[in-house]
Image 1 (cartoon, one colour):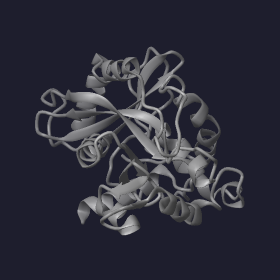
Image 2 (cartoon, one colour; image 1 turned 120 degrees about the horizontal axis):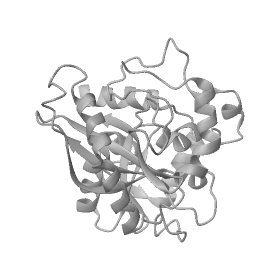
Image 3 (cartoon, helix red, strand yellow; image 1 turned 90 degrees about the vertical axis):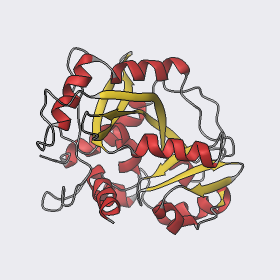
Image 4 (cartoon, one colour; image 1 turned 45 degrees about the horizontal axis):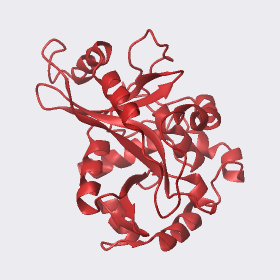
Length: 280
């Protein structure tokens, strides 16, 4: 069953995720034009190993068999390719902070596939010196758009604007669209980095941390009656994880909670938008 984070947990995620989920992921130097720092090779290797761990594969077997499409014993999940960095639109960029890159690193993602062709994305972060899978979601958006961006603009930074579920690649002071949602936002030919900043400042500038919008609780989740409606990108909420436990799957995706909550969208709403796009 798909569930959502209680409001108090979503608010807690806002306060803690940025500090805890980005530790050790990347080197410090970055500018708006050059893009955010990339994760180290060691980080990517550690994330890949976490994705391939026996307990992760065991959880994937349960995940892929959840609707009876394949039995747990026959799921035989495998991880394909290397872990890729996943960047979300940066609140600092929206706020107009000088030199802030357009996006910030939120987690590393690996693609998993079952024996019957189902696909899932493993979201991995470093916590307390060890790498852990914190979310498993259906589909392969993260790795697929990473490939698409590398093809469209080699060396560019692929990033996600979760508020409208749009994917872009940024480089050479340009922002280019990678999906239909992004085309609607910036046009088929993309836009300049400066113009993109003006657009997101207008859209989200009043929804940043400390704003009246955030303090009102609107950025901390949705009412129970609304949450989960149409949530097509399946994941399951679980309790917290320690180093001795298996992977955690979280409906509102704690790995990305800092970016989502800070800019006014819960993971549940993000899943609804992804589901609508997949149905269309």
